[in-house]
Image (cartoon, rainbow, N blue to C red; front, side):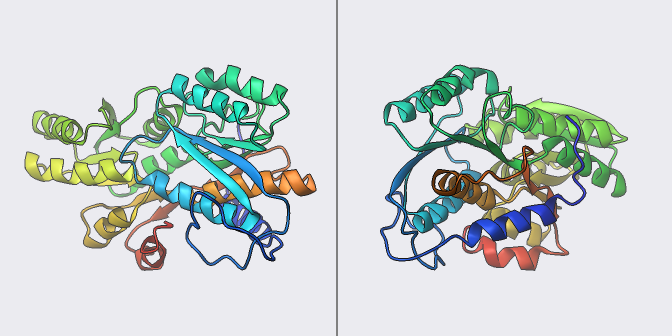
Length: 331
């Protein structure tokens, strides 16, 4: 499905401004936490329950940022937010069924393994529960029956990454996938391979085992000294790759997708060259806020198309502007 992405960020900021301008008055906070703060008040609409179900793996700090955005919207909108996650697609489907059984008022879900979720999402539709997608599933959300989608175009992001590798003169990139079969991660590496003029090599690791991940990348670098760039697909894996490069005695450089407070510091120090940011806080915020808008005003964002939250590069040229938000845990 081809789309024009040139003005994606501007469109996202416009959508965010509309969403952030929701009404406020007295009311209670979300049971899951107050998020990043800065809320002007709480909506005077009736309290509703929204389930957010992601493919978060243990220790992946990216999802802490998504959740903070979701919690901030929940606090503003008088929403009881129920967050749950599992990297296994079939177990994620079970979590969707649990949300249906709880008779939630809306479901926000990631589609990293869309085939595993089809049946459960159909049941939610049959039960009259509105659903939106976020983060993973750009090419699958409409087929899955979701109303809206908030995320980045991973193929476009991968191609942008590949073109940047061309610009810096890289010759051999190792693209490290920490979860085999995850459609978003596979698409990122495919985008790199499509745009990069050098050699792109895929390395699968177990992202849930940090020690094994670091040693696997290190062994590959020792085996093949021609690798001059390591592309990782998550901030925690990038930080592990930095140690892998050092321990292997390699001259390879590291760049990544996604950010975290520690990753921002690594860019400032120069140990990581850049990150492709998809604004996870915004994904979490818009997913919850959009369900509230639909529930109480029948609004649907995007006009039948995905609302893009990225991609955008974070590097030394703009790291100071990003760092102030990373210190709050929102970038």
